[in-house]
Image (cartoon, rainbow, N blue to C red):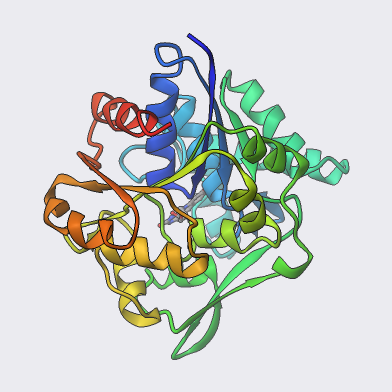
Length: 316
Ligand code: FO1
């Protein structure tokens, strides 16, 4: 079988699960997998560079993910955090002891002048991951959310305030100076299929698409582009995507997701995968000019991750 290049655009939780499904079928389906990951959630904590979405995808692909929290490493301990708390350092953004090793390693390599892309390659190599994990850009981009209280850093809004404040506006600080990396541009150009993971359309996939040149690269690609709806039965499986449709505009539904992406660029998508629960909205989405595939998009175990990946790869 000829090998196929699959490119997945991903945020954290949903993106990691789908990327893992692709990795599970990589041998049987002869897939070379590249995952382009949102870095707008990145932050500095205790002087360390933390890349939450890259790490969620990385730990998931390495079989190290903490499935209780949905972020961080499994079998985690919290001794360093307890010490920091004792020193009066803010610990609302919790870094476990094992996770700290990643951030120390990343920060050292970045301070040595290496690009985030190369640092990520070194970390994934260290964990024995076969897929290519590609930060969307090597430049610093930081997502900010405007609320009734004013502008908040992404993690301040998401973690510290539990994304309870309605998001009134989103901005990506630094995005004007960002570029897709050569590795990202090359992966998109030679892809056989490009997949938008069931991640947040505003602050995960939306951040990646906001990198100047990204939409142009995607539109120029020969590959078909397929989105997986992160909205099932009108609600986000996890996180604030549904609330964000309500406060930023649009409809929290599979059709709303399709309209959102087509609103960024007409013709951006060729197809959308929606959950069985939303099967009745297929005609409405087909009327937008998209092919619709109905599948089980809720992934509760490895078999369901692999099954969804197989369904998506059939779109190539
Ligand atoms: N999410 C939380 O809800 N609470 C935390 O304390 C927290 C710490 C954390 C540390 C490292 C990391 O890689 C992720 C972490 N996350 C935490 C998850 C993360 O902030 C969000 O889930 C993503 O940014 C949204 O995709």
